[in-house]
Image (cartoon, rainbow, N blue to C red; front, side):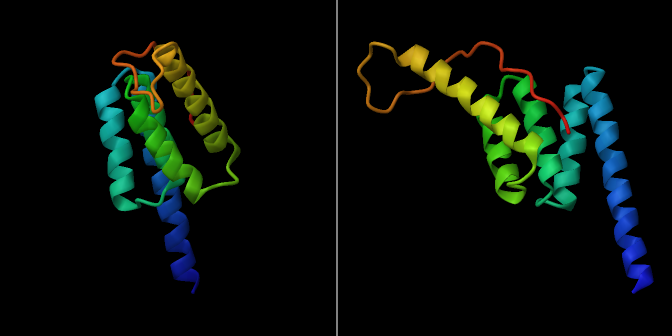
Amino acid sequence: MTGRLLGLCLLAATAAHADDEATALLEAGYVDSAIAEFEARLGSNPYDAIALNNLAVTRAREDDVFAAFDLLDRAARLAPEHPVIGENRATLRTWIMRRIETADRGSGAVVPEPPAVLPPPPDLWVP
């Protein structure tokens, strides 16, 4: 049993280290490399709410806000009590809805189409 627990701790530490590397790549402006790192982490564990959140942050910074929201929605379902994930999801949802309302104002559409071009998304943070 001790060996198994030790193995789990090492996997967690390795995953956290990989996430730190991906976050450093993102902050240094190597967005494609950061995306590849976050996606690789999710390939190992598709139920990793932190990796989903961090990939969402990266996607939002690349103006792919709808993909970012989808990722945050998945992360929130996996970790509903995580305050950063919840706050990121709420912030991005509010931002998207405001842009849709602005684009739809006066058109009378029942279900508004998302605008073709959105202003830069709000800053999100990596937990």
